Length: 220
Ligand code: DX5
Ligand code: ZN
Image (cartoon, rainbow, N blue to C red; front, side):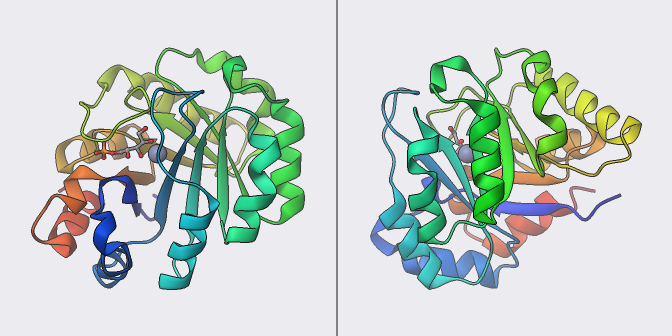
């Protein structure tokens, strides 16, 4: 079993104390920092951009896991690379308005890890032409746009298919889940084959970050 990686999503952090929040989750043994980039076009919310990612970069040595929920991701990839992203994940849906294959190669050529993601209503088949070009597959367990939503258990079918793909192709792409992840849904996700857990509310809205992260990594 690959080590379970916990990536707190700063979308749920207290932005008036963002530097402290990032340092606190690093001290609490987080593995990565998940950065949710929303443009108000691909999805119905606006979050933050490369300048905030650059600010977070200065607060921590942890890998920055940048999740682009934007249109025309290819246009912005260089700015997130310059800001210090260690992995960049883009959406596969046509509504994200980019040439998926070209953008994945662009991320690869930039030296960042390459991630691909799909919304809950998107079929797994849309990913298949690209699975051998990526380092990480992000299965959204909520419809993207907001933190604090409920986990969609039916998405575990896609986690299982990704784990089967790894097995049948002798690969180990990371299988990441994002949305409604807490100790209980972490257990379900790991049982189905996920090894990277993104969590916002269950960490930043707890009063003990280390305990919250421990319970995600080892839900027992
Ligand atoms: C939603 C984002 C998630 C979100 C997770 O669009 O991609 O990363 O911040 O937040 P919780 O853990 O609160 O569901
Ligand atoms: Zn996310």
